[in-house]
Image 1 (cartoon, rainbow, N blue to C red):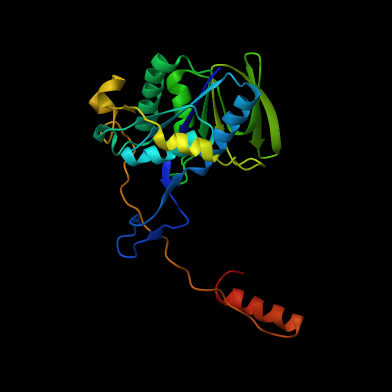
Image 2: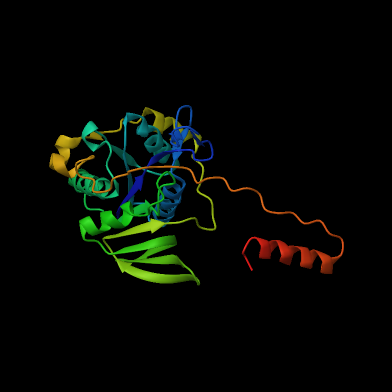
Amino acid sequence: MNMLVCVKQVPDTTEIKIDPVTNTLIRDGVPSILNPFDGYALEAAARVKDQNPDAKLVVVAMGPPQATAVLKESLAIAADKAYLVSGREFGGSDTLATSLILSAAIKKIEEIEGKFDIIFCGKQAIDGDTAQVGPEIGEHLGYPQVTYGLECEVAGDIVKVKKETEEGAQIIGVKMPCLLTFTKPSWDPRFPTIKRKLAANKAEIPTLGFADLGLAAEECGLKGSPTKVKKSFCPERKKAGLKIEVADPAEAAKTLFAKLSENGVM
């Protein structure tokens, strides 16, 4: 069995601040981390590998050269091989262009590693929160997909996925090859071992560039991105609400009613 996990290096959103003048993200000095939802996807794939020791687990990331850090982290946790997709031509790609680039990269990696039975993705990246790239990859590849996965297991050529729903959860069976996206489950991802960390630090990670993927220039980067950001801004801060301090409940209710009436609320 061959499995692939798509991972992304993202800024730690708990450390991000907004420039009050430009209303843009201040990224300087903000540490980069493995996208948490991709970590859940990696753990889900690792659990399938635990039950199928002969399975091969490959990870791929698209980004600048420093994105090799999350690939090495993935190798330290559970992956067997890793690939970086990187090039100036990919800069500025929106979700559509990104998914097209990654699907082309997956096809290229399959020429080396063999056909993938399951492709795992996080449900969304915490720096964009679109939840679009995973499903779009599935569409480009023509694979059936299940989103918002919590856990999965393989039975023959079927993957049984526990999917999060508004009512709770449901079990869906999907035939391989397929694509699955994962949200936060009830368990935490495993930690890397020292042995795997040492091996990951020494690992050579191949890079796939624009020339390797057979795409046209107008399909990548800003040229291939129909999404255009016209403006970003922070919502205006609203003044704090009214605080009524009256000991008698009946009197407090009258005061509250009077204030709501004055402001046209009632």
